[in-house]
Length: 195
Image (cartoon, rainbow, N blue to C red):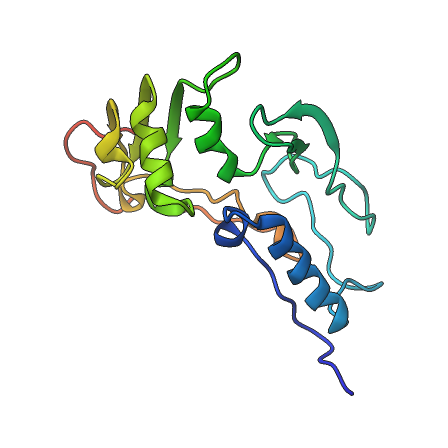
């Protein structure tokens, strides 16, 4: 049996927010392993990027993926991991339980920056119950999203054409140091602010 020599399967926001995110991720990794889709000597490696922070590891050393910390979900037996740039991360599908379960450490306020948990999380009814139970919900977004409809405060943001832009999210995936600058095309209206 012959396998393709390149390509890969990847997962992201949808699978990682689902109830069985660990199983989904394991299946994606198993599929890549069965098809022989893993990094080999001489393949492209991530770089620090033009403006981004330094990436842990050097050269072709693998990036630390599962650096465990002492933080845990109060409700589920899930331990946080340290993300690529040092942020503490717990799967987002635990957020609703952390809001709805009373006790020490209960989440009572939430700031949503350009996201939409009301539509993005897997259990919509449970998510809406959690969002309405918060003491404070602040949403910053371009439009009135499903989450913003439940917010105490909505902060209007400039549209991408209304602001200068220098993307910093994916420049460490290029094979060489590269970035681009985009001038704003139109002046913003009303009292919108930059994100």
